[in-house]
Image (tube, rainbow, N blue to C red; front, side, top):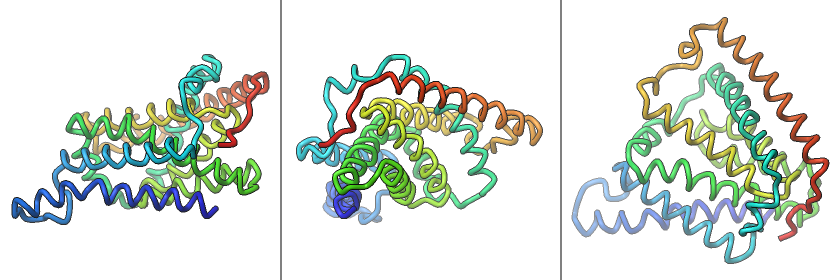
Length: 260
């Protein structure tokens, strides 16, 4: 557990280090607000830089197992089933999040980042890569080496993943989605399914933020409570079918959970 928490703490350190060039630039220029990044472009670039720093650490110190083999070790049908699996989960989890109605502390930052190319890259490419490498790769592998069983590994990695977001509106969604992503990583031994699911989730989020419906609640988007309930029921059915098919598919796949 200590190594898992160290890796998460290290990512926060990388985030701080990544802001230093911009803070120093503002200090040199004598501009106001030098100790905080309020410009969406600068924030996006600092997030990308922190992602690169963290990924470099994880790969250099071999905290994760990720290479060319990671793209071919999972059957293509497993990747295909990830699409309905994560889309149905997203619909239900978004409805649940909307019902909780928690404060969204990062809404303005995400909205600003979604309006520039570096922010889009940070959200859709950088975040799926670094968060899967960190939480499913580094954290779960360290828990595995510490003797944690499969359920404990998945649960703790999802809990840490949820708390890591520090945004009340994201924590429940990230925790529950983290359970699914952790299960996929454990059953496949590959980060690719999780990266794909994470990419789909974040990309749809960016598309929504860039659309005219960024502030529209899901219940209003689908046309009311009745259609929303029908949508939730259908999504649960799709998720259950996709999940059980994935379990059946993975029973035929020989894999070893990463020991690295």
